Image 1: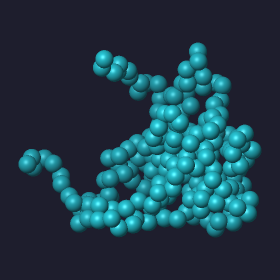
Image 2: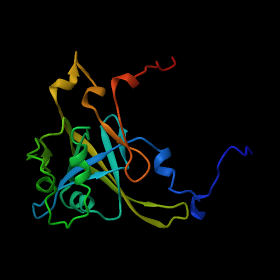
Image 3: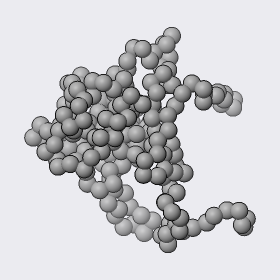
Length: 206
């Protein structure tokens, strides 16, 4: 085994100044999720474990580490909205991560505009250039290799409505870089941005 490789078993600890797991699986798209409590309270929160998992039907999902308000709301109402986190909205997105009581409306807390969705009951962030309206499909509690339940839940939703700022559609193609999306990296405060200078193309093998 090469001595140039640092090896550790996670169960025994990483032995570094900061856990490298999140920094290695990075950058990651941000699950900026709005939901509605059964009493009508609006909620907005970012999740760093998020991605897309299927084309047809389109399914996205995020992990709630601990039983957070978003999870409780989505279980109660059956829907949510995902928003693209961009450089312009970075500070608001970060502010919406504050650990506040479930009775607090994060839209008001961070100064964003809540507007009705077209298909689902959860409100949408008007300032977000892209939003997916979603209906819950599955909520799965994760478990370790020993079969023991983990205090984390995967929330999956089918995308039933898509909002895109028309400025991001060029000749019928969505311009990823033009939206200036941000992605979560390792460390307690690290993010990355995307720009056109980093674009490269590779065709799939035949």
